[in-house]
Picture (cartoon, rainbow, N blue to C red):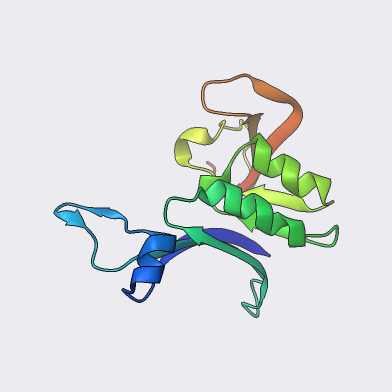
Length: 147
């Protein structure tokens, strides 16, 4: 399964503008209102298992946490790097799902192992610049050519 979020333009009508809102732009606002959404989809078929949409100002993290209500213990969920953190891990763990995060390069703790595929892990943080949450660790498989 894959978990990600994005935005979509909607028709430039008064009801959409009022409900969804406009994102900022370099010269005022954008041409069309936009909605923000998060979705859980099957990676092979692209079939949506769950999706949640809201106004442009909505938090992608909050929408994604609501989408995880559709997860179950049979799922391995690949989450984009914007979702890394303890709250998302906890939401998936409560449903019995396994969650794999895509990490930014600066979030990876280097491994000293010298093999083609290295499991790299790092402490899972509750929020930026806060202490690691006990018992929660992020892990990612990194393919590399080791000498």
